Image (cartoon, rainbow, N blue to C red; front, top):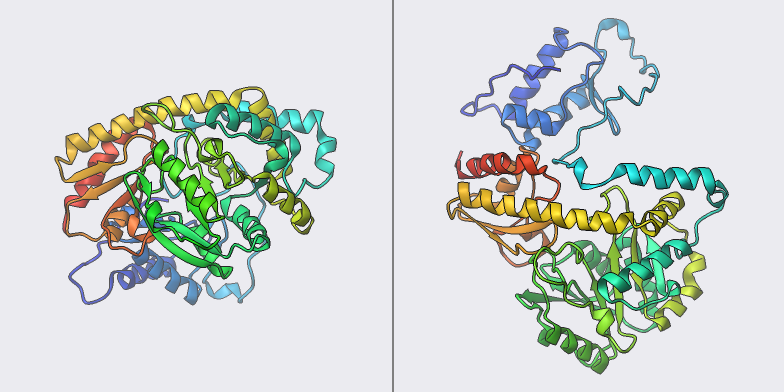
Length: 461
């Protein structure tokens, strides 16, 4: 539908969401907006009217309560039938047409050139046509062995990780794997976990909610401060040594050996999240901690969400042999949370070499995007924005010289469909830094979008 022609008065004593509610209610009542018509998404409405998503949501929520509009899951908001002849009857079922179904638009920018869906489709079709019998049974709780085999080959050649398929556990995301790991750790009498600050919050929340003692350890330019880790008690430390999120710090080899020494001396384990280690654009990757370990002290985490596409929730952990044996004893209590079809498709995608080709493509594409991002900030920000950790991964950190709070900067970026998140959400320490996810912005749009984002950040009102 066309954008609404409404003038909101910021100087009025009536809140903006009430003004918007009044306008929409009037237009619906007069049937200027017809029953059954799809309304703009919250993000689109906020962008078109120059208001916050919270304001748009306030208006829609009041209309929902009063019955002027309805919400359809995974579809959006629609005008309800409010005429006198409706008799309070429920909605009639509607026919589903996938090609014309009004799916909600993506929240942020996306770049279809970042993945070869044609090759993925070929592999999936091959699984369906040549191996349909494999899909008639449930997936292995540990993950399909053919995929675990391909992962073991890949991590050895790319990251120097040494393992057998029997040491690999596959699941739908790092958070699910963390639940498995917590149960293993309990059997090892480890009930304390140290995490990076700032760091990946979901893992911290899982361990905390499961009753583990927690220690937050600061991160510096060379990674987590090892000297502040717990001593004399069996512990686990969750680290991202190759591309720490969100600071981008890289732990040098000397510090890696020191961390391994800490684990040996304190009968502890290291949980190594090799977050986006493949996506490094300058120099060679530093060897993984797991590959340097001569004992059973490192659990290695990997994921395909950044190197395939976000909808694929396939992650894995590589357990030391002793911990793998414990998982073998408890895995019967779990169902596999990853689609068996997607696991088999990914195994074929890797076996045919398509995954390796895609990694090389991403490195080249994201390196170009990173260069375009840095050039645009230099051109339009003039020192107003200072980019940090600019050597790897799918995001960079920004320092913005403004009195506007980080949440407001994030909101203004979101109105341009740009994903910017305050670092303060990941730490208890005060910081005004922002995480800018540039990887999914199409290369040709980066310059103009950053120009508009910087312009919006310079505006006080």
